[in-house]
Image (cartoon, rainbow, N blue to C red; front, side):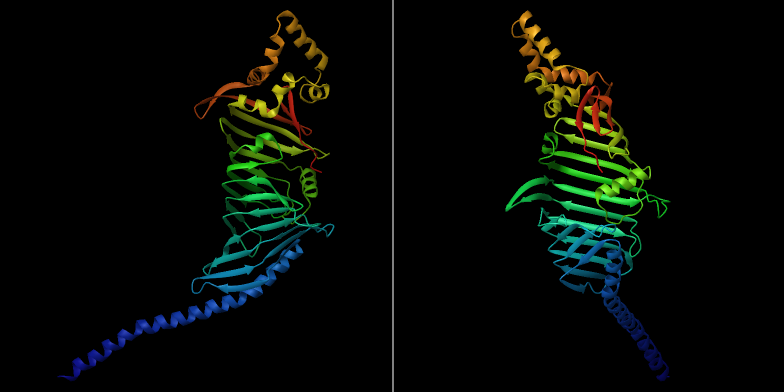
Length: 394
């Protein structure tokens, strides 16, 4: 009678070893799989670099290492360099050198990779010494769809800065607290005619040396669609813009929101390119606080300091400088000092004139006006005023 319980105890003890043995086998198999995948990193990386080089994008790093066992692959590249070449002419377009790039992929989702960039970055135009220095506190990117054509890409930077290098001096060019750029192929996009959907967000950004308006901190959120692209290979910008124009492409601003101090604006519209490379199209804008922009555009100074004929030809074609001077002089003769008052309050008059262009509305609870901003063969027209001219893009 004592043998039966003993046999049962042996069978139950054997059952206790099954789970650990199976776990050990799974661990060994997973480890073998991870190390095999890690051994393929160099093979896959070299194959990817070869494909990118054919497209004009050359990547290299001084030292490469693989870690991340057991559930992910971490590829660390020290002193990486990036060079973009024009395939048509074989000339360099841009060279960049960073401190380090860390690329991470989960073993069960290898088509999605996440990268972290460590600055600073030195960027040159490909034909000379360094022309820009860029830095950030956090720089990350994610790409989905590899190793084939990427279906989506995202870039995020915290506290990005860009300085233009002039000799041994770094001149501040752009600053922001936060910046992110997203791009994806629209659903159903054919490979030879991709439609790119983009989104750009900038928090507390500023750009020096371009226009006084851009030097003041601003927040922006822009969503758009780009058509007319043939591929995403590196090309000189004039060549890229010429390609878009020839294909009848355009940039559709689906929605844009810009806030700068008391100025708040939203916009939507479509812009295209003319045969000579100028921007053409119309953007419908709704603006609250437009009177704050008048001094930055310089329209008030035209009357305050006297208006050269060349300036009038640019912003108000058909109006003669002598006519304006005669009018102000007549006001002074009729009522001494009246002409000066008119000139000093020119910004109010200009603002009233612009307010009369569109329709009264509200924007996020504030009084606002809706009006079109037209681009006519490169000339930026706000009502009767030519406020700027954009140089040809090719």
